[in-house]
Image (cartoon, rainbow, N blue to C red; front, side, top):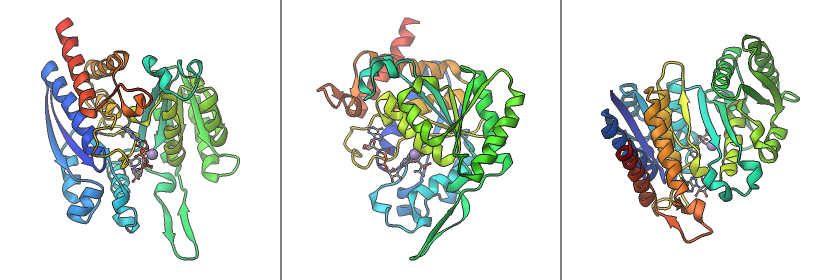
Length: 359
Ligand code: NAD
Ligand code: IPM
Ligand code: MN
């Protein structure tokens, strides 16, 4: 197959980890006889510096003419004092909204060889296999009014029934392909938007009688994520709760540098990016863990290109590299066995090559 991939490297460790993902995709293309065209565009802080716009028109046009988008991360201290419209994060929110990427899929799975990297006990972590389904284009991130004066500030949390219905459907469909359980996370004891959310889940579940459904308030969900994370299968929740819970969930696996994500709509087009940010504290030092970006590339193959075998090959290679004891600093900080971003990526590539020799 021939596919066009827009690569938006962004800021901080963004360029380092997307370079790793592109390198891995190039090997996959060679091995499976595909042609991937990588075209680079600007987003975030570097786009503000170049174009005075965190999401330039050229970038939108590039993504519109592509089959999928691979994104690094945006943001950094350099732009933290900018006015809201000229913040890197605005570019990310704008691209999600422009392409109507309402469903953000964030898988969290324990890696057997990394159980010790988690601050949680091994027996709590070992069976963890969940998918956080985060609504991505609504809620308090986008509601109007949103403004601040000296004296007060307002943000608006608004959801329409349709917005909730489509993300809840997505969660039920995913649960069917997994362990058959949906946990809907809300704050229905306080928020009107959560009451509507819960109503929609109750209506939708009638269409999925095979799926087990539970409602969980977000505060206790945050607690259960740590005390009994293996009890979750699919978690479906609104935009900001999903943002917070997914960073929390990354701790279960051992590092934020491990979690990939897919931001998709219903037609196969998608944007693929790590859950983590631009990590300014480690940027430019070769310390970034590229696993999240590489696994995001695997999700791109799976969800946008329908290349399940190729996606699984990447995931297997990543797992084998961990099993063989190769870690980046975030995972191996307590030992002297840490490898650089590049060394670790090359291990994944060696592993992919080995898969082909042995097959
Ligand atoms: P962060 O995710 O960038 O970093 C949090 C911590 O995790 C840091 O200590 C960092 O070093 C570490 N970390 C994250 N990813 C890592 C990796 N791949 N390898 C090794 N260590 C890793 O969150 P933050 O520090 O709160 O935010 C920094 C900037 O990133 C902010 O401007 C924020 O807005 C932005 N951000 C962007 C995205 C995105 O583009 N999708 C996501 C989150 C945060
Ligand atoms: C994420 C990030 C973004 C979000 C920020 C950078 C706008 O934290 O992708 O998780 O809050 O969605
Ligand atoms: Mn986040």
